Image (cartoon, rainbow, N blue to C red):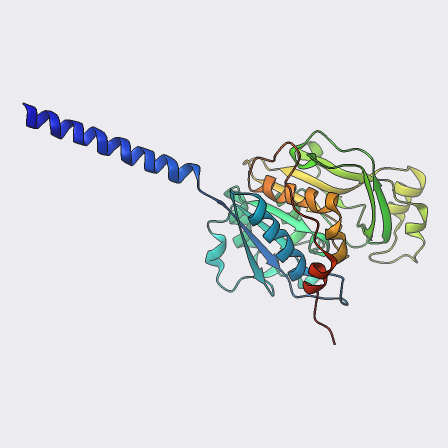
Length: 299
């Protein structure tokens, strides 16, 4: 009887230990966030895809215990298995017909169907309407469409923000960047939450009409109707997946702005379903020397 009782107690003890270890493993599991930085383009200090991703990934790993941010540089990963267990993907690179995602639309769509988060920064928002545009509306709720959207450089001012986890810790700010606007959004806007909105100055449409500069629809929206333009937004997919688009990010030094950096860090964490602190995700303001070290080394 005593021997049988000891065996029973041993089994109960081992079960408790196994449960505790399982619970600990579950509670300490990190969210995998894969940054995909396209090849650098433009001159030094602009479109610093690798530098921007390096800075943001480090900030997440330093400040968010639940985050495991990984950087892939130079374009789409050669080994796509790295994306299979991702909780969120961040794309920061050149767009258009040569967008790095173009050969991989079907495989990415399968990840989105599983609920993987998606964050798209700046030029990576521009994709061809007939192909990737359909997917982007499904993944993040919108995209930059040529002959509809425009890409002027201007100082946008943001005075208020919605009650959303991404807005936590953000204070009113103004900053010069190549802010895209008049984007093409999904027909059903109910799942889209604008995070940054501003009314562009009339002079942002002073350029001649062109694929990226001006068109009748955008002139009517801004010059006639005076409609606020959405420059950053969230998208809640029906399957629970989360998307975020941010049109800024042309100017590398803008990551030194505490509000810009915090907003995008909040958004990346939110897309991976990480709880955002009341005051947002903290990160130290990078020194100018640190920013310079992350730029393209151009002779």
